[in-house]
Image (cartoon, rainbow, N blue to C red):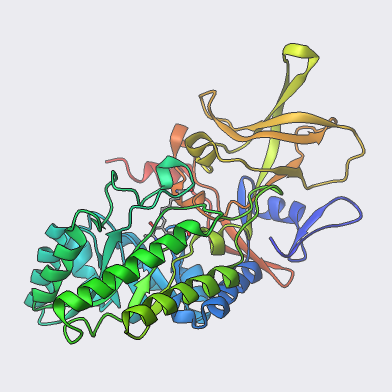
Length: 434
Ligand code: LLP
C-alpha cells in the first residue's frame, strides 16, 4: 500500500495505524485495505483516460458496499458479472447507468435484474443471450443498451487460466469466424436492444502493451467494416470501444507494471489513426481495470503459528512457516503459481535471513501462500507477517475449505481503521445447515 511505513522500531504502520493494534482488534488473518491507495488508483486511471466514466472498475477483483461507494464517488463506472455483484452495487446506491453487466452465461434472473435496474450496458456474449435479452427488454417495454464482446484472437502473455482472447475458449464472438459480424447483424435487428459499443478483454496480469494495441487495431477495423456493411446510420449509436481490463501489478519488486497514462496515450493514438484512415470519428475508449485498482493497496496480515525446518539437497535448508490462514484466503499461489512476497511487520529483526516458505493451515501440502521468501532466522510464533498486494482476487475467491471462516476486511485511512466486512464465524457457517 502507498501508505505503509516501517518505523524505526521495525513495526509497520498502514496509514498511521499500527499493525499490532489492527491484529489485536480484528484478529488474524486480516485483510487491511488502504482507502487512499484505492482511491488514488481510481483517480490515476480516470486522469489517464481523460474521463472517469470511461474507466469501469471490475468489481470481480474485490467488491463490498463501501468500496462500491468509493468507486461511485471517484466518478468511475462499474463492471459486475453476476446478480450478486449487481446487488452489492445497487445496495451502495451506485448509479445504474454507470453499471455494465458481463458474463458468458448470465441467467434470466440476472439479465432481468439488470434491465429492471436500468444498467448502462449489458455486454452480450452469445447468440442465445441476444435473443433472451431482447425478449426480456421487450416485455418491459424498454430498449436496453448493449455491447458485443468480440474475441480478437490475441495470445495474451499471461497464465493460460486467465488469458481470454484466443479462439479456443468460452468467451465472446470470434472476429475471425464471422460470429462477431453475425452478432452485430442480429443486435441491429433486435427491436429492444441498442448497440452502444464493442468490447474486448484479452486476459489478466499483463505487462506488455502489444496485446492491448493489437486488440485496439482489430476492434476498430471490425467497427469500420460493420459501418460499411450496415451503414453509418444504423451504426451511429456505437460510441464506445471497451478494451477490457488486465493490467498487471507488482506482486514482487521484479514486476514492472505498465503506467496507465502510457497505455492510454498509445491506445488513443491507435484508435485515432485507425478511425482517421477509415474516415469516421473515433469512439470513446473504455477500460476495465480490476486488479490494478484493488490489488496493490491491500495486505493480508497473518500470525505465525508453527515452524519447521527441512534439510534440502546441497546443504540448503528450507523453513516452513505456518500461518493462521492459507489457500482459503489466497488460492492464487496454488491455482496460478502466483508469486508473492512477505515481510515480518510486527517488530524489527537483526537476525540473518533464511529461505522460508509461508504455508497455511489446511489439510494439504499444496497449501502454500508464499513459495519463497527470506525471513529473519529468529521468526517465532506470534510474529505478524504481511503478504503484499492481496487486494484483488483473494477475498473474492476465498473459500470455507476445512470449515475456516473468512477473514474480515478493514479499511485504514487517517490513522483510523474501519471494518468493511466482519470476520465470518463458525455460527455463520452453521447457519446454512438445514
Ligand atoms: N473485464 C473483464 C471482462 C474481465 O473478465 C476481467 C477479469 C476484468 C475486466 C478485470 O481484469 P483485471 O484488470 O483485474 O486483470 N482470478 C484471476 C483473474 C481473473 C480475471 C477474470 N477477468 C487471478 O486471480 O489472477
